[in-house]
Image 1 (tube, rainbow, N blue to C red):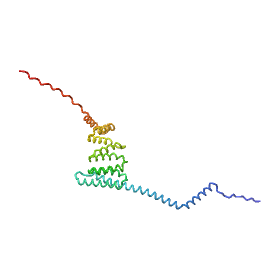
Image 2 (image 1 turned 45 degrees about the horizontal axis):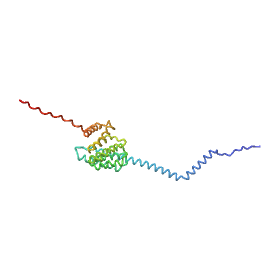
Image 3 (image 1 turned 60 degrees about the horizontal axis):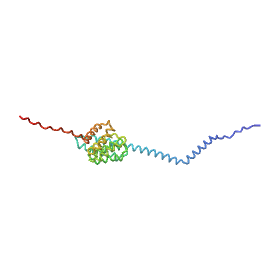
Image 4 (image 1 turned 90 degrees about the horizontal axis):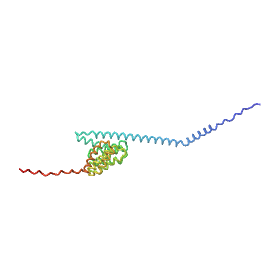
Length: 256
């Protein structure tokens, strides 16, 4: 009697069966949504390319703005006093180049500096109205650039002062005191005090001089402020004049 060895049917382990089933579902899903996947991949490429294009475009604009600003600065600072016509032409060219930067590339890192320099160039050309407009445009457009904001207000105050509008000049100088991190607060206090003194407002002038002496004792302007305080206090409280000595009667001539 012969015995046959029964070979059990080959079955996949449970884990392997699940794996094969999962792969089949994945392949089936890939085939079903292949166009959606292709479209998504293309959109991803386009998005990445667009982002790269924006960065490239901004970099190109920043480079062009920097080159224009550098050229304008060369014109501004190479004005020979011996040739007034050439100096005036260079100043005019500098203004035009600065204007191009702020008009064509307003969002570049160079634009705030160009806007400030534009105001300075107008100030040098004695175009006070345009200088004031340029400084105010910096304040409204680039007011978050604290490193330049204090200097802008100082130049704005100077422009108002040249124009004869001392009230606006004092306001511009005092605004500097409220700017966090401004490096020229001592200059602002001194200029405001000096203008108030010229406007015959000694109390306001004394207040600013004394604040300068108290807050910025190491400032090079402190000694001059102290001198002005002494002069103003002497004018405010003059010492009474000493009594004049009584004149003695002249001696009588002796009889011969």
